[in-house]
Length: 400
Image 1 (tube, helix red, strand yellow):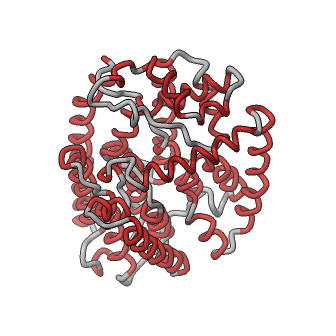
Image 2 (tube, one colour; image 1 turned 45 degrees about the horizontal axis):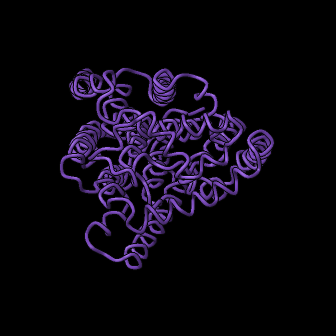
Image 3 (cartoon, rainbow, N blue to C red; image 1 turned 60 degrees about the vertical axis):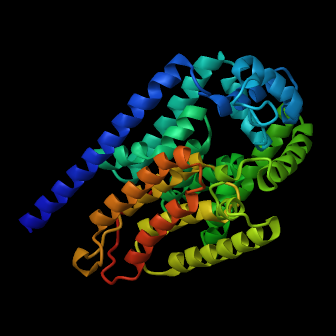
């Protein structure tokens, strides 16, 4: 017993050291660029901030007008008028649901640099709180922050880390605090592609308190949005969402930036029809897989990890920073207690391998310029599969 405890402690230390090395390298390479303003730091955040400024001026719906928004953003990042940033592609359009104006307008009351760092600090704090709630301890926290997609989300000022925090928070409060979970679902509507699988799981597993709460809170958010920012914002959002779909899925965006199965197939030369058909087939298979896992007598940590991973694979559009959600899946899997002797691969070994793959593929992405997201997801799915096929699954920590 003492020998097993010593081995576990040694393994945890090894993983912690690996995470610390990766995190130190990441900070050394990225923070100077963020501080001196070189590159396109805060590029994606600029569309949030500018949309919020337009909302404060009483022109929220105009934020969905690509030409008006771009003119204002170029004042923040004038270097985007020059190569290698073609003006017709950068900065990014604003196509978030109107409810996001509450956040954007709040941030727009601050000067852009202060708003960017406030936004970044808030996201990282939410992420840290959720990770510690899933798995207390330095090892889990280091793993969650050392995953490369977290860095990419921070550098461009994206919203994926906040959405990942909300989705993990929904899972944490699902059973003990279903009303809180329902409110968090309503907040997650700003990133609708993250909520495709969740309603199915809730309905199939009969978590009606969560469903009813979300169904009541979401209309309240919509009503407040329309009253404060104008009902024309919903018209603008519909048009912007249509444009975004065409832009991202028909070649307006470089295929290597699409980290989905669809993106891989288009990158490989498949046409739209065949690529989308195959993507839908994979999404359908993944959905069935998740529903089966949620009906099995397995650890809740395994169920949560399956939902987080499949959430990425279902959407035809997700970017490299969205893969930060996989770090949350790994942290959940740290709680997947099992009889180690019955495993083909021990829990700790699988975690080290999984983390290593995410780090290697994450840092390889900007070098090779190939969509690697499905391969990152496949790594986590393999870890889940190993656990589900082995006997000896034990009840893990209760969440809530």
